[in-house]
Image (cartoon, rainbow, N blue to C red; front, side):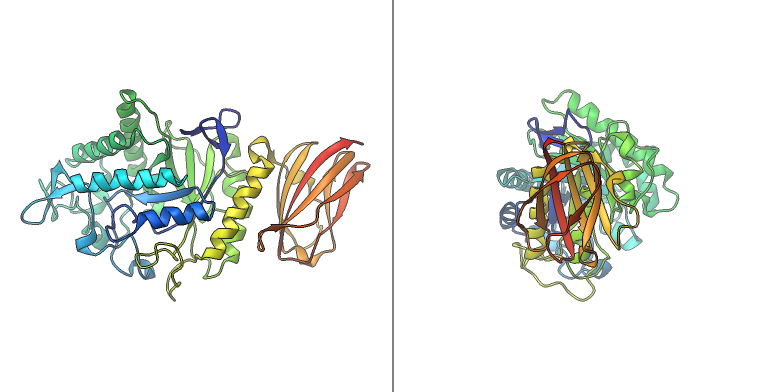
Length: 439
């Protein structure tokens, strides 16, 4: 069962064993797009040693080439769009009748994810970025019976509106259907902050978080709730009391440092807009997790209907990147943070020497005992200085790009700043320092 780790609430655990969730998944349409082969997809994630993905619920869909995304899994053909509501003979969605095929697929998708060791973030709702996207929704008044939804997409979030009973019924249905699955958690709304004035979204999220909690009171299992805070970074002051996961998109390390005191699981929940190569996304992942984040979820555009194994091309306007090699590098990162047991650590930025070179570095540590360090641009200096207590330390160097461990070392340190020769000239390096003896 996925739950908050009792020894450190900034991390998750499965059946009591702490984990760091690392994902590199398709563009969120695996559930609602009948044409997508979810079995091959989850098998690929397992092969790449990844354990997390996001799925959108079917309230929101996109149009082909929306946001420049070619072969967008979240933009299924009309005949492949699988939604929670059954359709009438006239082709509209009956908000009082569930689509049995959708829930059969939901169970099949979740069963496959569980069999492959993948935890699923099920995203219940999503901000509509334009009127065209709202008009695609089954809940739009032109598409549904009864036609109670607002024509104005911003009014969708009104907890006093006539659509609320149907929104609540949908959440209760999804939560009830997924209650037996230990590998799922719920995100309330994807990117609600996309509107400048989003006060209504706070009220809506609070209401739906309460609905989930109330629904699960009578069910065997309680699941975690995530709330999407902001792009990049923000000091969080408001979120539903039931939320234990705080999601950021395109996250900077400041998202962790500004909110570490909250003792919540902090997630880099979506990546993108950093070019079409591996380097910026690999560095984002390492930097975020090595600052104290608990979840990293990459948006991998190499997955599409024709390439469910994630080996598809990245097209010119696609706002992100993905590849088998990058997923291998993410899997290596997951192995490193679990080897380091980062849930026993905390950020230790004070160990770095000021002005020690042109370096971007992050460190977690159990002070005086064990330290995990990530360095970018490490080829520009000959030695790397960290402040450590007196003692004997083992040094294990790792190559995040080549995905292998280098020759280990050992050092006897009298205390103060220790100058460590970087193992090889490389763009990025990781280091695990463990105290093995007294000074």
